[in-house]
Image 1 (cartoon, rainbow, N blue to C red):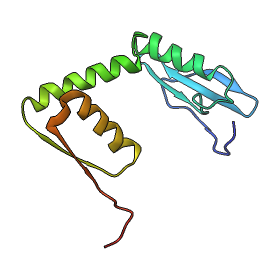
Image 2: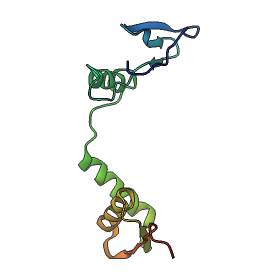
Image 3: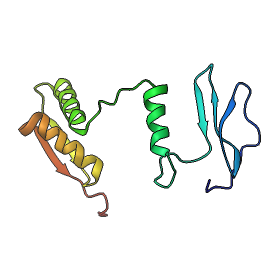
Image 4: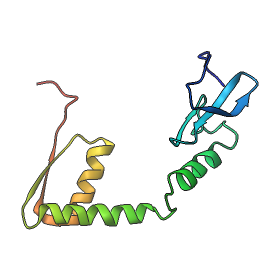
Length: 126
């Protein structure tokens, strides 16, 4: 644990499922309500078995399948755009940042020339 915050007492209905040298309450669960809490960062690289913990939570607790891929995501989002837009035209305002650039690429792949792109430069003052 790299923070100084500390759990003093856990709520009713919870039990401790993990501890560490720095805390008695590294992870808790309420089995009946299927609620879980951790007092550390499983997503960071230096957390030993962090990926395993997240994988187990996603697959065993949330019952998600491991079928997601980036290609799959792109195909699904392109189809959603086509369904929503239909035969209409779209104006896409881009800042040049990651989010708007991804939207622009997805729009172009989905509806091609029906997309008008507009580059905004919010960092410039008038």
